[in-house]
Amino acid sequence: MKLVSFAIRDGARHCGEVRDGRVVAFDDGSTVRDRLVSGDRTPAAGSGFALDEVQLLAPHAPETIFGIGLNYAAHVLEGGRELPEAPVVFMKTPRSAADPSALVRAPAVVRRLDYEGEMAIVMGAGGEIAGFAVADDLSARDLQRREPQWTRAKGFDGSCPFGPWVTTADEVPDPDDLGLRTWVNGELRQDSRTNDLIFSVAELVAFLQETCTLAPGDLILTGTPSGVGVYMDPPQFLQTGDVVRIEIESLGAIEHAVA
Picture 1 (cartoon, one colour):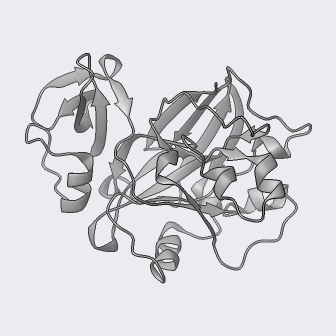
Picture 2: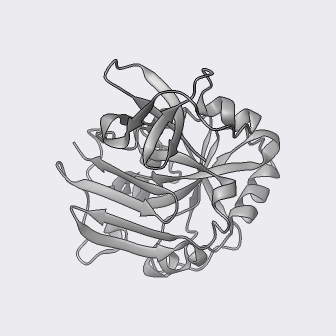
């Protein structure tokens, strides 16, 4: 099931599922978070809409967003680093979550904004994985380079567009082998597979659960592959008017502009 939140002409928020290329609303008033908590996969039976008739919203508002750094082998090598012995964990604030097509506005202090296409784990009840989504772990490279921790560099408001929906885990037999691609203004920048992950989906969840309760709706961004702008020659940072598109096999695509 593809759990989705969306708006139609009345501007109100609705929730449902994407099925057969259409959005079908839940007729029982349930939200995406409700379905993540309950595990209920009863098909939606409400009004249906064409995808191009609705505005896709962030599927839900995560309480906690964990980021994982340096988790693709090729990305670590392009930065001239050694492979980490354990996952590198950082936090993005809840206010960093944004709609999949949100207009991203970096803080005025940021001069070197970079994209990071990533697969997001979406947690369910009981510490189980409920599903997966597409995310952009937008990063202020100038702040990241000069500050010893990454909260400001990666956790600023709107720095985590995600969606376009939550694809439930039963539809993703092997999340550790999915194609991931990122384009900037139509130019392919990242082209990888999640089989290049250093720490697998299961290993990341287990590592975080050693110290943290993972609640329904929490996101774990699993890391970005090689091809980020900071390591291009010369570096290519995002500019006003740029459009970033991230697509992951079986999970859909998000696309957002930069202001």
